[in-house]
Image (cartoon, rainbow, N blue to C red; front, side):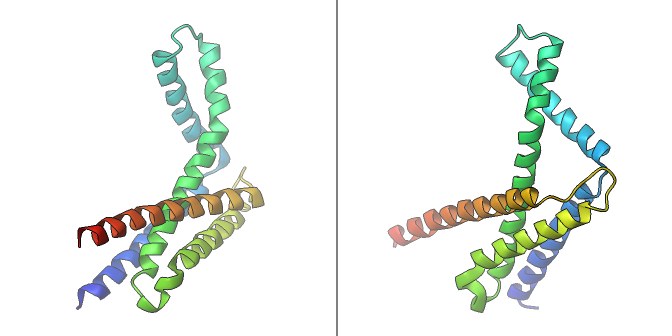
Length: 163
């Protein structure tokens, strides 16, 4: 088997794995998902308390953790979909006839998966599917692709300068 075909399978299975991981997180009931986010934001708030605000009382730490929860959750969603877009971009790059529009296809694929994921959440206890979340996830995918494009640009520019 040629290396090209092996890498195609690798990218394909990476995409399937990442989509399954996103599905798993989305399939958690709201209470479970909230506890996970609460633990993370609690740790962040504790770290900020120890480094910058040792005078904070327990109530202040908890209030700060509560304020952090929404942006941290949305940043996590954006990161999930940025990674999915990278994987889909790598997947698309395996096919030379698609290369000119790989970024577009990767963004469309990640955005479409975000929409199906939000639809799936309509059937999970305590969760809701929201257009706003599809937009946030799609923005994450777009930002991830722009970052990947910038990195690829820098790499190819450096290679061409060395020649």
